[in-house]
Image (cartoon, rainbow, N blue to C red):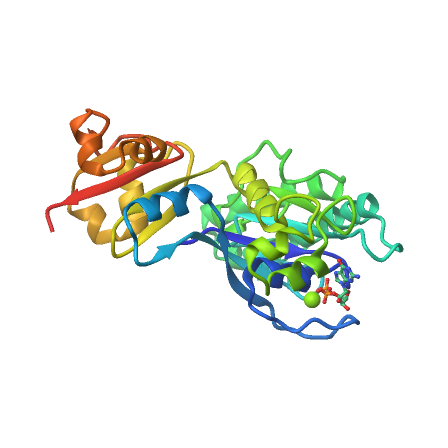
Length: 312
Ligand SMILES: Nc1nc2c(ncn2[C@@H]2O[C@H](COP(=O)(O)OP(=O)(O)O)[C@@H](O)[C@H]2O)c(=O)[nH]1
Ligand SMILES: [Mg+2]
């Protein structure tokens, strides 16, 4: 399952513009806030120059970057924000381009919207569980008590993050997800310019920018917020980058590639991407003793190139 990121922002902040920059999906951008109830969904590739170098070395016919799923909800309010309960992180797009936006103040507004959406969510759940608890089920009665206490906590202006009690697992609060602010405009990234540059070859596009590509900056922030690492699989047919959370194992890496590969897991051949580059080939790396054989519990490191041997 790819990681998911949800975009929030005030109307016309540039959410859909940034969505298009990230995904190149070409969703409709309008100069006014449209009343559309559909969210835009797409995949954003995570650029990684290590991947390109590894792919070049093994003469890969296909290069597949790691990708995250991006959801752009058209507006705020509990119902729309509720579409983001499954996401792993939230990107707050702030208007820094029109001159009428106030990035800091807008971020505060968005935080309150998220808080309000969570409170609404707890309230609705409490109503539902209260009805169900009339049957006398003790677990449900306990949940009613827990949710009542939680709601009082939220109504006192606190967030779910500073709630010390247990949360029902299905609650999926918004306010406890990493929130990544992104100013659209000078001082941040220029969404409109980036969208135009996305059509050009990278060397040409670079001439229009002051700094590095904005997309890289966004994915970098995301990777930091989620504590992500990348590993690579280097094949001639396909060379590919994958993401894991820091601390995840070789078995979890195998599973993210395919559940069959995890099931048939025997060993992982591991070499750091830069060591592989220095050696020039897997065979040479093995000869120099730089390729290690690791088991299921090996904790994958950022930049590892994995070759998983399976019984299948
Ligand atoms: N000049 C300029 N216009 C922008 C920028 N970002 C968005 N816009 C314009 O603002 C309007 C709303 O953008 P959109 O991405 O649809 O905002 P959303 O409502 O947050 O999804 C469109 O007319 C965009 O072209 C920017 O960085 N610079
Ligand atoms: Mg939009």
